[in-house]
Amino acid sequence: MSEPAFPEGAGQRVLLTAFEPFDGAALNASWEVARRFADRTIRGATVVPWRLPVVFGEAIAELDRALAATAAHLVIALGEARGRAAVSLERVAINVDDARIPDNAGSRPIDRPVVAGGPAAYWTGLPIKAIAARLRDEGIPAEISQTAGTFVCNHVFYALCQRQAEGARTMRGGFIHLPALPEQQPQPVLPLAVSLRAVALAIEVSLARRQDMVAAGGALA
Image 1 (cartoon, one colour):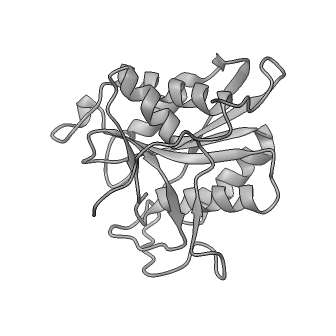
Image 2 (cartoon, one colour):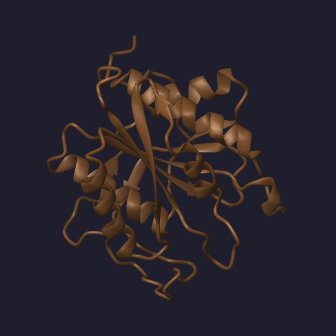
């Protein structure tokens, strides 16, 4: 049973973060999706897209600026997951930066905590299983993901969860990875229109309920 999360039509705000291109790419699927939500309203809440740099440290600083500017009640951070064929709803953020490639400033931290002395991990604040079920009902490939990686996506995800845990109790948030777009072939891709619909549904479900549904979403390995 769903539980209303926020009153509709009361000036609520949804912050939708996404990333700039990285690793030599011309575009980032997450920002191509997020930027198209500018001036959109979903369930009475205004959606505010915000682009983050793919730079360790700077991405968190920009996230903090976005949180302060929007006073958002719901935050959905988007990232691009090249090689994944489904919308990946991230379950857990871990306290480690371990970069396989340099970020856009040339930094490549290895085995470094996102936050020194912070908890090993945080759980998402999104109803990810309910979102996955809704996406699948509409024929959109969706999965519960057990890892957001150890690059800048997880870096931002962890920081977002920490801010939620340490005081911004009226704010809920989490992270969703989107597949690449068709123009980024060859690799598994998802059309822009499908990713747009997936994110809109994720926002709808997150605004409609606080508690997640009980459903299998684990992995054998």
